[in-house]
Image (cartoon, rainbow, N blue to C red; front, side):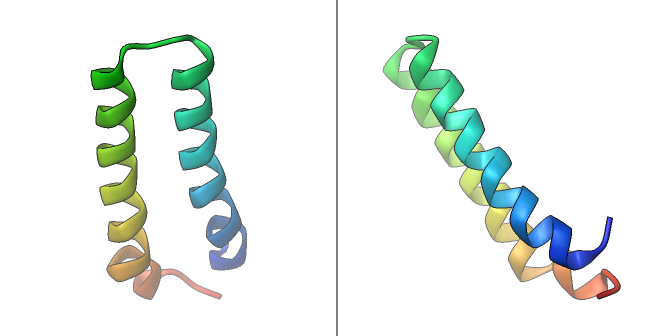
Length: 55
């Protein structure tokens, strides 16, 4: 995957994970955990991992 594809895929997967947790009626703690872990992952991608990928 190139960087342009990941720039679209990473936030979409994050949004899908939160939506799935809400749709499956997970408890508030689960949704918060998904949001925190996903938010950290998206931040890590944009802050560090993206720099090492080819365009």
